[in-house]
Length: 73
Image (cartoon, one colour):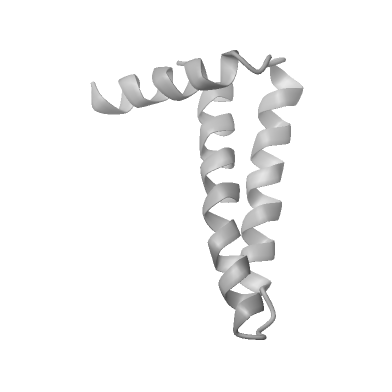
């Protein structure tokens, strides 16, 4: 597992988990501030990973598996 894999996986998870937060805030007619911050953080981590190592679409699930294997080890 490389640092770029970790950045990519954490960035995707943070950005993905911010979507329900954003939808909930919009449904309640609140400003989605936290969700917007989380999307920016997740996007920055994804861009950091992509700038250091190029990933193809099939590489993304493999990065998840490598990170998960390292965490469970």
